[in-house]
Length: 252
Length: 350
Image (cartoon, rainbow over all chains, first blue to last red; front, side, top):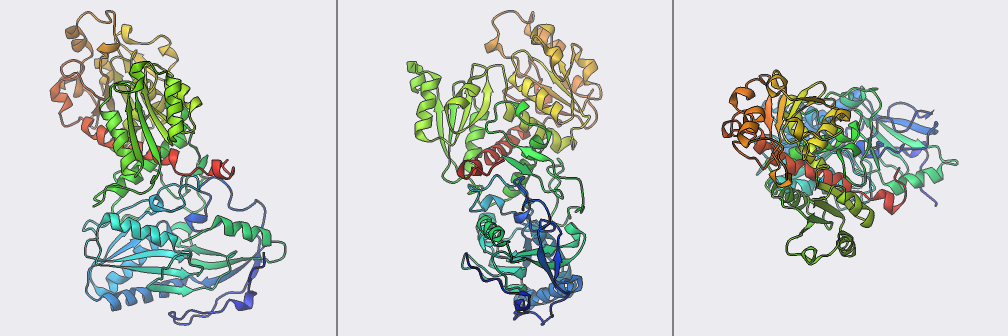
């Protein structure tokens, strides 16, 4: 299958919202196991390895460094305040990494607005639309703030926005928990390839990607370090593998 | 099918659900995730090894969190699936519990009881199974007065069979809900001392609990008059005692079993009064437990026989909570058995 696979130089900063931070670091051929530091959706929840064992050549490009992530979270916090003013805001992170992003955002929001900000987590596994196709997935924690979400401005927080199916599931879950006044969506990375008409309100960084790429978000709370990397398979002889990966449909 | 628990995830540590602000500790480079092997049918507590049992209990904790404080007490997870409650024996809480659990997961529930069905006209279990098969039941929850009936059934239907009590054999979901309740109050079960008292001979609850609780690391002591202990009890992973008072001292929990008069034809003990005096739980005996010790009973209770009303309704009793936990645990079992048929769809399942 012919696939648009832009060369390294095509990874440009297409972020219209960001402050124009240039790409940091240089691409490298890396033999590291590709499962490292991925979103939970891509981790071997079903006991099968994510990829065949053995090193797989990939071009790794750092998109956001630790300080970039901190600045991005600050900016999104300001944008949330700017847009919602004094209204009651509840941040709900989508496990696993969305929860930690939501906590960081809440800390910054509380500092900027000088008032406590409610934060919780919303597991969407039981609302997924592919439950019948996959072995049962491990459930994650759900904890809504004590005040509930009725009539609040709920900001869903996730690390990567991809197909949009996770967000669809989160919207369904919210509907069963209460009736927020407004629901908004904040993501650290928007990598495109939406399968549903869903758009984020706050985007840390837009990253143009090919289907076969992987965006690896690492957060200190889970992975011991903060970074966002784009993993692009070395094109030669790896086309089959990437098309397999498409079929599995890692998503956000 | 196999599921690996995320290494950073503490599956159900039995603690109260963490508040919104409590961070979960992430430990990069921790030990490899234990492999979870959910059996195709849940026929015996012995089908669950330790990682799998803990995965079921962890899933139940997550479901309890997800259901807490909701406006709509329903999840769309098993939409379009059919669960048949096939009950050949009377039951209140188990049947209702499974029905509520399936409905909260949006499955369609068909209740089938032997009374008022073709079984009373003499239909065999096999013919009943074929009927269910033709109707496309995704799961069959089976209670039967004969030990092994669900096992037989599992060979005749394509759906997943869940044993809801078979004769004097097993009742695995009761053991799971007891373990869930114990973990909520005691934290982990490793090294905890659980005393199971009463009619061990006829009790499927005792069999399943001995298997599951010992799998989870607890020390189980069985206490009963010699006539109510089964042959071969020495080979069970449990200690046996005839002295209730001595066994209760410092124990972490006591589980009282119902004296099953409907299964007794001969004289297993001289009088009810004498049984009650030797093996009944009253306030004095309850206070022999450790300060944090709790009292369980799978129900239905014979008040005044194996347990006094003061203890059953007392502060250390978690009997009502057991019923509520039953729904949660059965939701977890249905979710883990019924969601995902990857092995059938593509043959990818391991």
